[in-house]
Length: 74
Image (cartoon, rainbow, N blue to C red; front, side, top):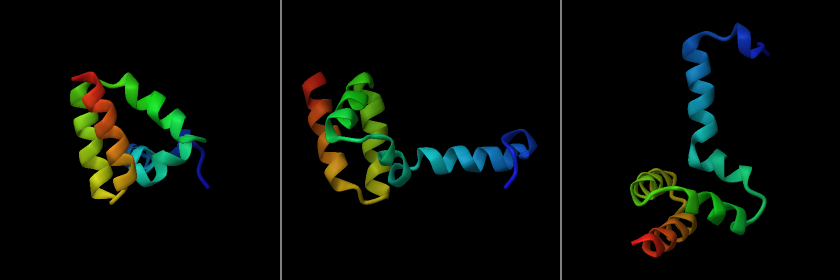
């Protein structure tokens, strides 16, 4: 496995894209409350974007949480 400093820009971009993909990203959080805390940091527009991305990965439970938090902000 290459060190990060040895990766091409394309490889580094791919690693970042993989990291932020919702199916991978949700594993950053140990609990649903941690996920909610993260979501509350975002604006309504940020949450709108996140909902669309989570829908692509069919993570509907997380979409519902994001929508609830979005409604709290409106």
